[in-house]
Amino acid sequence: MSQQGIIKLIGEFLTYLEVERNRSERTVRNYDFYLRRFFEWANWPTASGITLDMVRKFRVWLNRLKDERGNTLKKNTQNYHLIALRSFLKYLAKRDIKTLVPEKIELARMPERTVDFLEPNELDRLMEAPVSDASGLVRVAVNLPLIKLRDKAILEMLFSTGLRVSELAGLTREMVNLEREEFTVRGKGDKPRIVFTSNQARYWLKEYLNRRQDVEEFLFVSHDRAARGRDAERSLTPRSIQRIVEGYAHKAGITKRITPHVLRHTFATDLLRNGADIRSVQSMLGHSSITTTQVYTHITDERLREVYDAYHGVGKKGRKIGNNSIKKH
Image 1: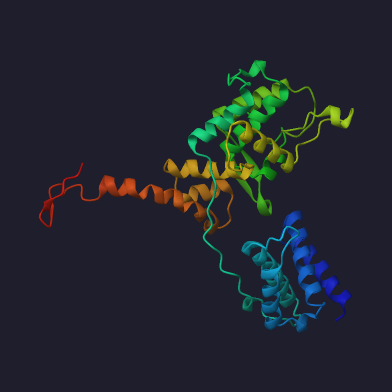
Image 2: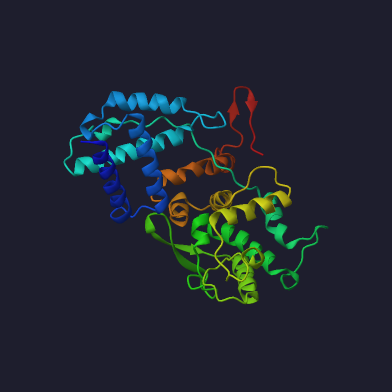
């Protein structure tokens, strides 16, 4: 099999991901990049020529690879290369094309992941940033410029719904009924889920939409006519929304890096701290696996001391340990 033969197989595999596996455009693009990087490094071996020793050497090469800033690849990025290769090999096996057994490729062990989230006082400052002036005075909706109304609605919607930034950017007016407290969104893998909105989010979204004069279908648009001449409004990109969030975090005096995904983490953290079970949070976040949601277990762990103090030894207040009488306070 020639180099062109492998390229053809990769192309067919990417089509399979898009059409049959319903993977996103970004995922397909990333898989293409990871696979081409492997095959270029390995000098375009045939499917049957891929060996476990070759994969081991590729892993060493990835581990030592540095970007233009001199930084090595993160472990999860290295794993993405192996996941793409393993998925490609599974596809070849389904087509009865002789190749390396995919299950022989093991992923690198990952350090326990932690998440960043906003503490309540930080969240309050961030939410007030679009509606407060230079002196810190909070302005009412009627006195706010249209863009400030939009930005306030964006922040409230991110925290209220736990949406991914790409999901928020793709919302249309038709999708969100302000008379109801919920709507349906399609997340990763085009899977639908119910999303709930708070009174605050619906209030600010309504104020923003009532002020708009355009007929653009998207919920959040740029309004930057000066930069585009007479072009109609267009939807904000995920990157634009990220810049908006980062800008208000800076204005609020929050020193750590705040992104839309940090607000998603804050949404989940808020639910768990207030007693929500992790399975419900999994559903609201749209995680296909509970393993993904378990990154938030450190939040529930914080409540263990409260549970221990509240319930352990309640009926044994005067029990003696050694020569000391331990009383519960």
